[in-house]
Image 1 (cartoon, rainbow over the protein chains, first blue to last red):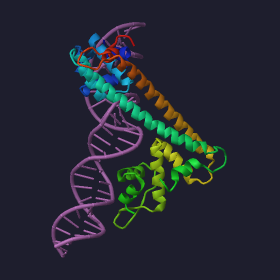
Image 2: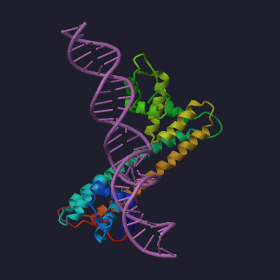
Image 3: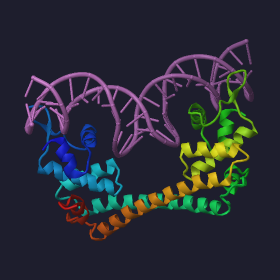
Image 4: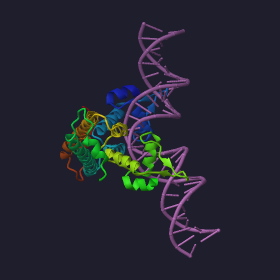
Length: 131
Length: 131
DNA sequence: GCTACACCTTCCCATGATGGGAAGGTCAAG
DNA sequence: CTTGACCTTCCCATCATGGGAAGGTGTAGC
Protein backbone atom coordinates (compact mmCIF):
# COMPACT_ATOMS: atom_id res chain seq x y z
CA UNK A 1 0.00 0.00 0.00
CA UNK A 2 1.36 3.38 -0.99
CA UNK A 3 0.87 6.44 1.16
CA UNK A 4 -2.14 7.67 -0.84
CA UNK A 5 -3.99 4.40 -0.39
CA UNK A 6 -3.09 4.35 3.30
CA UNK A 7 -4.43 7.87 3.60
CA UNK A 8 -7.69 6.93 1.91
CA UNK A 9 -8.01 3.84 4.08
CA UNK A 10 -7.48 5.63 7.37
CA UNK A 11 -8.71 9.18 7.00
CA UNK A 12 -5.26 10.57 7.73
CA UNK A 13 -3.94 12.71 4.88
CA UNK A 14 -0.69 11.75 3.18
CA UNK A 15 0.72 15.06 4.35
CA UNK A 16 -0.03 14.23 7.95
CA UNK A 17 1.25 10.66 7.70
CA UNK A 18 4.63 12.03 6.61
CA UNK A 19 4.41 14.62 9.35
CA UNK A 20 3.67 12.07 12.06
CA UNK A 21 6.65 10.09 10.88
CA UNK A 22 8.86 13.19 10.87
CA UNK A 23 8.02 14.11 14.45
CA UNK A 24 8.51 10.55 15.66
CA UNK A 25 4.91 9.68 16.43
CA UNK A 26 5.25 6.82 13.98
CA UNK A 27 8.38 4.79 13.24
CA UNK A 28 9.89 5.39 9.80
CA UNK A 29 7.86 3.54 7.20
CA UNK A 30 9.64 0.85 5.21
CA UNK A 31 10.43 1.83 1.66
CA UNK A 32 10.10 0.13 -1.70
CA UNK A 33 12.89 0.10 -4.28
CA UNK A 34 11.53 3.34 -5.73
CA UNK A 35 11.72 4.89 -2.25
CA UNK A 36 7.95 5.01 -1.92
CA UNK A 37 6.69 4.37 1.60
CA UNK A 38 4.99 0.96 1.99
CA UNK A 39 2.18 0.34 4.47
CA UNK A 40 0.82 -2.98 5.71
CA UNK A 41 -2.07 -3.95 7.95
CA UNK A 42 -0.16 -3.08 11.10
CA UNK A 43 0.57 0.47 9.99
CA UNK A 44 -2.97 0.96 8.76
CA UNK A 45 -4.19 -0.13 12.14
CA UNK A 46 -2.01 2.41 13.91
CA UNK A 47 -3.06 5.18 11.56
CA UNK A 48 -6.68 4.41 12.21
CA UNK A 49 -5.96 4.55 15.91
CA UNK A 50 -4.45 7.99 15.47
CA UNK A 51 -7.35 9.14 13.34
CA UNK A 52 -9.91 8.13 15.96
CA UNK A 53 -7.93 9.63 18.80
CA UNK A 54 -7.66 12.91 16.89
CA UNK A 55 -11.40 12.90 16.35
CA UNK A 56 -11.77 12.70 20.12
CA UNK A 57 -9.58 15.77 20.40
CA UNK A 58 -6.49 14.15 21.89
CA UNK A 59 -3.32 16.12 21.25
CA UNK A 60 -0.49 14.58 19.28
CA UNK A 61 1.49 14.31 22.49
CA UNK A 62 -1.30 12.45 24.24
CA UNK A 63 -1.72 10.19 21.23
CA UNK A 64 1.97 9.37 21.51
CA UNK A 65 1.38 8.22 25.07
CA UNK A 66 -1.74 6.30 24.08
CA UNK A 67 0.11 4.61 21.25
CA UNK A 68 2.89 3.55 23.61
CA UNK A 69 0.30 2.08 25.96
CA UNK A 70 -1.45 0.42 23.08
CA UNK A 71 1.75 -1.26 21.96
CA UNK A 72 2.40 -2.52 25.47
CA UNK A 73 0.08 -5.48 26.01
CA UNK A 74 0.65 -5.42 29.76
CA UNK A 75 0.13 -1.80 30.75
CA UNK A 76 -2.36 -1.25 33.54
CA UNK A 77 -5.63 0.12 32.19
CA UNK A 78 -5.37 2.78 34.88
CA UNK A 79 -2.68 4.52 32.85
CA UNK A 80 -5.04 4.80 29.93
CA UNK A 81 -7.90 5.99 32.10
CA UNK A 82 -5.71 8.70 33.55
CA UNK A 83 -4.87 10.16 30.15
CA UNK A 84 -8.50 9.92 29.10
CA UNK A 85 -9.72 11.56 32.30
CA UNK A 86 -7.24 14.39 31.95
CA UNK A 87 -8.37 14.97 28.39
CA UNK A 88 -12.00 14.83 29.38
CA UNK A 89 -11.40 17.47 32.04
CA UNK A 90 -9.69 19.57 29.41
CA UNK A 91 -12.68 19.21 27.07
CA UNK A 92 -15.05 20.26 29.82
CA UNK A 93 -12.92 23.27 30.66
CA UNK A 94 -12.89 24.36 27.03
CA UNK A 95 -16.63 23.85 26.75
CA UNK A 96 -17.21 25.96 29.87
CA UNK A 97 -15.00 28.70 28.50
CA UNK A 98 -16.80 28.80 25.16
CA UNK A 99 -20.15 28.64 26.90
CA UNK A 100 -19.25 31.63 29.05
CA UNK A 101 -18.30 33.56 25.92
CA UNK A 102 -21.54 32.59 24.23
CA UNK A 103 -23.61 33.58 27.24
CA UNK A 104 -21.98 36.98 27.54
CA UNK A 105 -22.28 37.60 23.83
CA UNK A 106 -25.89 36.52 23.79
CA UNK A 107 -26.69 38.91 26.64
CA UNK A 108 -25.06 41.75 24.74
CA UNK A 109 -26.90 40.86 21.58
CA UNK A 110 -30.27 40.85 23.22
CA UNK A 111 -29.90 44.54 23.99
CA UNK A 112 -29.04 45.52 20.42
CA UNK A 113 -31.79 46.35 17.97
CA UNK A 114 -29.89 45.17 14.94
CA UNK A 115 -31.59 47.54 12.56
CA UNK A 116 -30.70 50.73 10.66
CA UNK A 117 -30.19 52.77 13.80
CA UNK A 118 -26.61 53.41 14.88
CA UNK A 119 -27.07 52.81 18.62
CA UNK A 120 -25.43 49.54 19.47
CA UNK A 121 -25.02 48.29 23.01
CA UNK A 122 -22.75 45.52 21.75
CA UNK A 123 -20.09 47.99 20.74
CA UNK A 124 -20.83 50.12 23.78
CA UNK A 125 -20.29 47.09 25.97
CA UNK A 126 -16.98 46.25 24.34
CA UNK A 127 -15.78 49.83 24.57
CA UNK A 128 -17.02 50.60 28.08
CA UNK A 129 -14.65 52.27 30.45
CA UNK A 130 -15.15 49.84 33.29
CA UNK A 131 -14.07 46.25 33.09
CA UNK B 1 1.95 56.33 28.65
CA UNK B 2 4.60 53.93 27.44
CA UNK B 3 3.75 50.58 25.97
CA UNK B 4 4.28 48.73 29.24
CA UNK B 5 1.86 50.95 31.11
CA UNK B 6 -0.65 50.65 28.28
CA UNK B 7 -0.31 46.88 28.45
CA UNK B 8 -0.87 46.88 32.21
CA UNK B 9 -3.86 49.20 31.80
CA UNK B 10 -5.59 47.15 29.13
CA UNK B 11 -4.67 43.53 29.61
CA UNK B 12 -3.08 43.38 26.17
CA UNK B 13 0.60 42.42 26.35
CA UNK B 14 3.20 44.81 24.94
CA UNK B 15 4.13 42.09 22.48
CA UNK B 16 0.60 41.92 21.21
CA UNK B 17 0.17 45.69 21.03
CA UNK B 18 3.16 45.87 18.69
CA UNK B 19 1.80 42.93 16.79
CA UNK B 20 -1.63 44.49 16.31
CA UNK B 21 0.08 47.59 15.03
CA UNK B 22 2.27 45.55 12.68
CA UNK B 23 -0.69 43.76 11.10
CA UNK B 24 -2.65 46.97 10.73
CA UNK B 25 -5.34 46.30 13.30
CA UNK B 26 -4.22 49.49 15.00
CA UNK B 27 -2.82 52.62 13.35
CA UNK B 28 0.89 53.24 14.03
CA UNK B 29 1.32 54.68 17.51
CA UNK B 30 2.83 58.14 17.79
CA UNK B 31 6.41 58.19 19.03
CA UNK B 32 8.30 60.23 21.56
CA UNK B 33 11.71 61.70 20.88
CA UNK B 34 13.33 58.53 22.10
CA UNK B 35 11.22 56.56 19.62
CA UNK B 36 9.16 55.01 22.41
CA UNK B 37 5.51 54.50 21.53
CA UNK B 38 3.15 56.91 23.32
CA UNK B 39 -0.42 56.02 24.24
CA UNK B 40 -3.23 58.33 25.32
CA UNK B 41 -6.78 57.75 26.46
CA UNK B 42 -8.04 57.10 22.97
CA UNK B 43 -5.56 54.34 22.32
CA UNK B 44 -6.15 52.82 25.73
CA UNK B 45 -9.82 52.76 24.94
CA UNK B 46 -9.26 50.91 21.69
CA UNK B 47 -6.93 48.44 23.34
CA UNK B 48 -9.51 47.70 25.97
CA UNK B 49 -12.06 47.18 23.23
CA UNK B 50 -9.76 44.67 21.62
CA UNK B 51 -9.07 42.94 24.91
CA UNK B 52 -12.76 42.46 25.62
CA UNK B 53 -13.54 41.29 22.12
CA UNK B 54 -10.73 38.72 22.34
CA UNK B 55 -12.15 37.48 25.63
CA UNK B 56 -15.42 36.88 23.81
CA UNK B 57 -13.52 34.78 21.29
CA UNK B 58 -13.74 37.10 18.29
CA UNK B 59 -10.95 36.55 15.76
CA UNK B 60 -8.53 39.34 14.95
CA UNK B 61 -10.22 39.71 11.60
CA UNK B 62 -13.64 40.11 13.18
CA UNK B 63 -12.23 42.56 15.68
CA UNK B 64 -10.93 44.58 12.78
CA UNK B 65 -14.46 44.78 11.41
CA UNK B 66 -15.89 45.61 14.82
CA UNK B 67 -13.30 48.34 15.33
CA UNK B 68 -14.18 49.85 11.97
CA UNK B 69 -17.84 49.87 12.94
CA UNK B 70 -17.01 51.29 16.34
CA UNK B 71 -15.10 54.14 14.79
CA UNK B 72 -18.01 54.90 12.48
CA UNK B 73 -20.63 56.67 14.53
CA UNK B 74 -23.29 56.14 11.90
CA UNK B 75 -23.07 52.49 11.04
CA UNK B 76 -26.32 50.60 11.30
CA UNK B 77 -26.39 48.41 14.42
CA UNK B 78 -27.48 45.60 12.14
CA UNK B 79 -23.93 45.30 10.84
CA UNK B 80 -22.66 44.73 14.34
CA UNK B 81 -25.38 42.23 15.10
CA UNK B 82 -24.51 40.25 12.03
CA UNK B 83 -20.90 39.83 13.03
CA UNK B 84 -21.92 38.94 16.55
CA UNK B 85 -24.50 36.45 15.36
CA UNK B 86 -22.02 34.78 13.06
CA UNK B 87 -19.54 34.49 15.88
CA UNK B 88 -22.18 33.16 18.24
CA UNK B 89 -23.08 30.47 15.74
CA UNK B 90 -19.40 29.61 15.50
CA UNK B 91 -19.14 29.33 19.26
CA UNK B 92 -22.15 27.04 19.38
CA UNK B 93 -20.70 24.85 16.65
CA UNK B 94 -17.44 24.51 18.51
CA UNK B 95 -19.25 23.73 21.74
CA UNK B 96 -21.27 21.03 20.03
CA UNK B 97 -18.15 19.52 18.54
CA UNK B 98 -16.35 19.41 21.88
CA UNK B 99 -19.46 18.09 23.58
CA UNK B 100 -19.67 15.25 21.07
CA UNK B 101 -16.05 14.38 21.76
CA UNK B 102 -16.64 14.47 25.51
CA UNK B 103 -19.72 12.25 25.24
CA UNK B 104 -17.94 9.66 23.15
CA UNK B 105 -14.94 9.66 25.41
CA UNK B 106 -17.06 9.40 28.51
CA UNK B 107 -18.88 6.41 27.07
CA UNK B 108 -15.57 4.72 26.33
CA UNK B 109 -14.26 5.48 29.79
CA UNK B 110 -17.25 3.99 31.53
CA UNK B 111 -16.35 0.58 30.11
CA UNK B 112 -12.75 0.66 31.32
CA UNK B 113 -11.86 -0.59 34.79
CA UNK B 114 -8.93 1.78 35.24
CA UNK B 115 -7.00 -0.54 37.56
CA UNK B 116 -3.92 -2.79 37.38
CA UNK B 117 -5.44 -5.07 34.78
CA UNK B 118 -4.30 -4.62 31.20
CA UNK B 119 -7.71 -4.98 29.52
CA UNK B 120 -8.76 -1.57 28.31
CA UNK B 121 -11.82 -0.97 26.15
CA UNK B 122 -10.67 2.61 25.57
CA UNK B 123 -7.66 1.47 23.58
CA UNK B 124 -9.68 -1.35 22.05
CA UNK B 125 -12.24 1.19 20.89
CA UNK B 126 -9.63 3.43 19.35
CA UNK B 127 -7.94 0.55 17.59
CA UNK B 128 -11.05 -1.27 16.44
CA UNK B 129 -11.17 -2.42 12.85
CA UNK B 130 -14.56 -0.95 12.11
CA UNK B 131 -15.15 2.76 12.00
C1' DG C 1 29.39 61.15 37.31
C1' DC C 2 28.90 56.08 37.40
C1' DT C 3 26.49 51.85 38.06
C1' DA C 4 22.53 49.05 38.17
C1' DC C 5 18.23 48.05 36.68
C1' DA C 6 13.97 48.54 34.36
C1' DC C 7 12.24 49.80 30.42
C1' DC C 8 12.06 50.49 25.35
C1' DT C 9 13.36 49.30 20.25
C1' DT C 10 13.64 45.82 16.22
C1' DC C 11 14.34 41.23 14.50
C1' DC C 12 14.12 36.31 14.42
C1' DC C 13 12.22 31.99 15.98
C1' DA C 14 8.83 28.76 18.22
C1' DT C 15 4.42 26.82 19.17
C1' DG C 16 0.35 22.84 17.07
C1' DA C 17 -1.94 20.78 13.46
C1' DT C 18 -2.64 21.26 9.04
C1' DG C 19 -2.43 22.51 4.19
C1' DG C 20 -0.37 24.59 -0.30
C1' DG C 21 2.75 24.26 -3.65
C1' DA C 22 7.25 23.78 -6.20
C1' DA C 23 10.70 20.79 -8.34
C1' DG C 24 11.66 16.49 -9.55
C1' DG C 25 11.34 11.07 -9.77
C1' DT C 26 8.21 6.84 -10.97
C1' DC C 27 4.68 4.12 -12.89
C1' DA C 28 0.82 2.42 -15.61
C1' DA C 29 -2.47 2.98 -19.38
C1' DG C 30 -3.32 4.35 -23.90
C1' DC D 1 6.29 7.64 -25.91
C1' DT D 2 3.24 10.76 -23.95
C1' DT D 3 -0.03 11.80 -20.36
C1' DG D 4 -1.56 11.92 -15.94
C1' DA D 5 -1.59 10.18 -11.46
C1' DC D 6 1.16 9.09 -8.20
C1' DC D 7 5.37 9.57 -5.13
C1' DT D 8 9.65 12.16 -3.02
C1' DT D 9 11.71 16.25 -0.26
C1' DC D 10 11.73 21.03 0.98
C1' DC D 11 9.94 25.47 2.08
C1' DC D 12 6.19 28.47 3.40
C1' DA D 13 1.55 29.85 5.44
C1' DT D 14 -1.93 29.78 8.85
C1' DC D 15 -3.54 32.08 13.99
C1' DA D 16 -2.48 34.27 18.28
C1' DT D 17 0.98 34.38 21.25
C1' DG D 18 5.39 34.32 23.61
C1' DG D 19 10.69 33.88 24.13
C1' DG D 20 14.81 35.87 23.65
C1' DA D 21 18.82 38.38 21.59
C1' DA D 22 21.20 42.74 20.75
C1' DG D 23 21.17 47.28 21.52
C1' DG D 24 19.30 52.01 23.03
C1' DT D 25 17.16 54.95 26.96
C1' DG D 26 15.75 56.61 31.49
C1' DT D 27 16.01 56.83 36.33
C1' DA D 28 17.39 55.94 41.19
C1' DG D 29 21.05 55.39 44.43
C1' DC D 30 25.76 55.87 45.58
